[in-house]
Length: 518
Image (tube, rainbow, N blue to C red; front, side, top):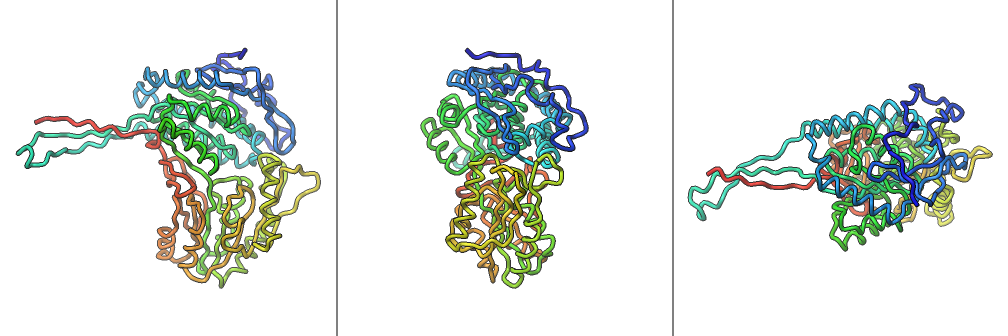
């Protein structure tokens, strides 16, 4: 029999101290689940159930908590709660300003407790604490603030309508209003590589639109989604509007995406998962948004600032251990400066320190688990064994590090069409190739099945524009990598990177209302 508790009274959610940890030893024990259990959140209550799954720190290998495993009845109750709260308009029926105020309160709580949330994210995923604090927790709060602002300032489209003059001479006086209705009940399927930031962004936009939501985090990283759900309750989101169910995709995920009460499925994940979700959603013709994998290119021309390019490319390839969908995992370098740029990137790559992600000097932490690390190493080994690439530079593994670590690796002279060029590795591996002409660079950059992001480095503004328009992807960075404020300005993916609207409107659908004033 599942046990429940009121999700709004959990005492572990006191505001965290302002000072972040200087290392693993300074983690406040109060930040961890007091009873060692992480519940699902269903209809405003914490549901623990009988089944448990261990939450393991990728660096220490220690189990720091056990998460509930939701069963079919839990999923049914979560969907029912979301359906009820949407249909009775307990959230979407509130004035836009009132909903925006709640989103702002969520942002305030995340900001006040960013040290705690970042520490939990690091323990759950292996992400560097410095990045989790200054990027993920920061962007999580910014997403909610952006959504609140969008909600307060959003306007409808109003225009005149016209009948064909030959049909009704003079015609009626028509005014057409187009509204953005909330799409309804959303099944939000989150990734494991950045659940705090990505989860907050998706949930913020869905709540702003007026949707009710059932969130399923991945089994390997459940903590942040539960924390966001708890924060939503504390901030004033009505019980049942935001629910979090925990468990495997084959059971919990399957139950979600095949339920006819779901109005939209939103997935951030891998290509194969996206295909399975689309196939399952087809039975009910449920709309699907997919943000999937990437194999993003960075194109470096000889007229670029080569030092800056090397720095940005290193950041773009190896941030978060390369476990980023938009990571710049391919670098295409003009042949006249190829060796020079490879050498500069190689020096930076070899110098990236590995170790405890709570150490502020560490850049490369552990991957999510040992099986994934073994998969990443397999790509490197096969590329070298087949002659598809050579190792130009690689970081050094310190003795005693667990098998979840893969050092940052720069491969050079990557062969066109090879596995290491075409496949998303999702780890700290960057492949370098040369080109002679613009046309060759653009053809090679677009020569994979992905279309998520890309970058160009050049000192020529006209060339930058040509490259930006030629790259077939949803986001292009010019003389930089990654965008600073992604809450509302993300591009839409192409090809096997998926298809997804972005921002507030991703969780709405248009309604047209025509008035006759004639």
